[in-house]
Structure formats: structure tokens, C-alpha cells
Length: 232
Image (cartoon, rainbow, N blue to C red; front, side, top):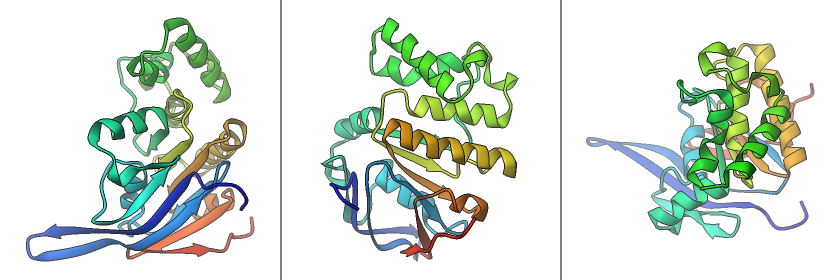
């Protein structure tokens, strides 16, 4: 692709040790991701998908190799700079939604902006815009327990976009949803990548969702390769 990559991953290696045993989670993993791309990371449970996303998102550090996101070398940043990167540049979506039960949908979406000390008027306007973007403008005052699984994930996606991130990291975002709702969520992510101009890395084991990606990276026993897109 033309232009500069938003994400550069070079030679990532991660080893987990349990007593005398070693498990190699990532083996010399390298790839690039460009602005406006939706990349699916496919692999079985335990293949290294989550480990890879955690390295790219700055949630964990590799044993070797480096990650660069938006010109910043994530793997070399001190903790305070990592916190700022995760707050301002990277948005996260998880399988478990991660919403705060006592807060309404609107309040959940506003949390990252509160942490960033965004002015109240600007924050409230952005919350309204994001809830409309994910089709939940009429559910702003409902709490998570009053929403379906698909609606809760939509709130989580809206929250991940609150601070206008350049990279969206989504770890099995459809894992707790039925197949139809899961596809709707993946289609929403694809639409948001286009409209917001972000790059998205989405880990999934669902073959029905792979066709919605621009590229597919397949990981097996910690080794990454680019896979051919399947026909829908």
C-alpha cells in the first residue's frame, strides 16, 4: 500500500515461563498496518493472537523485537508515555465489553474523555455523536444490564473511539455474541474504519467474519503469515 504505515512490527518474540517450562507465544513476528485498514488476526485459541494484540497495544512488552505506532516506539516507551499513548492514540475493544455497570451508556462512552479532562460541553457532544454513530442514540440513559449483548458491544466500540484514536485493537469482539449479531458488529467496525479513518486490528476465530477484513494475518504456534481472503 502507498503512504506510511501506522503500525510497524519487527521481529517480536515473547516467551512465557512456568517453572522450568517455556512456551514461545510469538516467534519473530513482523508486519505493517496502514491507515484505513481493517486487518483480521486469525488463529486458534492459544495461538498467540491476544499476546500479539497486547504487544501492539502497549499492554505488555516483548522479549525481543519492536512495535512502532504512529511514529512512537511502543516497546521503548516509559510507563507514563505508554499510558498517554493508550489514552490518546489507541482504542481497545474486548470480548467481555468491560463496561462499568453503574454508569449509563452515555456515561460509559464519556469515561475516556473524563480521564483526558475533555471540557464538559465538548465531551457531551462527542458522546452524542458516537452513540448515534453506533445506532444507540435512543439508549443513552440505559445501563449495561438493560442492553443486549450486541448493544453493550456497540457501547464499548463507541467508548473506544471517544478520544479519536488512530489505532483500534479489538480482541475477539464478537466472542460472546451470536453469529448474526457478531457479523453486525464486524460490519460496524469496518464502517467505522472507513468513516473515522482509523486502522483496526481485530482478533477473531470466526471464519464467517474474515471476509469483512481488508487483510488476514494467520497466527499458529506464535508464527505469523499473511493468508488469502476467503470468498464470501
